[in-house]
Image (cartoon, rainbow, N blue to C red; front, side, top):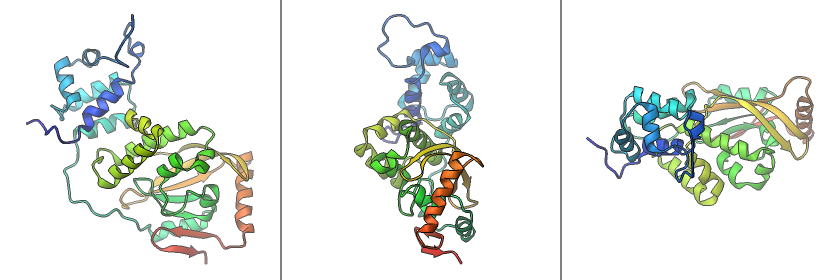
Length: 293
């Protein structure tokens, strides 16, 4: 039985967005004349995937929401999706049964708080919506937005000081949106997520354009380049480590290559924090400030 048209059509929206981003020449199609349709036409997608044009149209329109894994894998190949985006596509056609939602877990495990306190590197904990739940003083010195209660998406899109930290702001924002898609998966009807996406869509044209692309990127670490107002350019690695059975919490740690200019700049930031005269601290969204023993 077809799903109600009033339900969100996440699968169809994703297929349409990815279809419009594919360069016809990249999949071997000869382009002549002016094409009014961005990317591929529906009939071209169907032919390349080995399915009928009518069936593909039903998928985009939401009249069929449960295609086989074989069909989805063929579409992923046409759309040139990587492993993370393919897994996301498969999840849209096989959503988890709806369950009563529990309040998100906001308490950070005690062992992780202790690790933040002793690690001597900028580190913080975020949840699946990129709310900061806990942070050490080095993380907050690296960026004032890395403080409990802040949301990293709001910061990077709406805070001018945060934007100034990123020399490649366009690339950084595209990455964080794609990571959010991977983090929330098919759970786009969560009221908290809908509220955040709605708020940012109204406040930022750039966010709205990126969200409409439906890009997906795995939640692993990567390179991060920051132009810090006091210690200069920092070329850092950012590691994201899942925290056990914590409802999607991630431990995020920044570090620099030993002996590099960035390592020296990070040490200067450490010295600056120490010169403030306060003991190293960890702040949390639920427990306030914890001082090192």
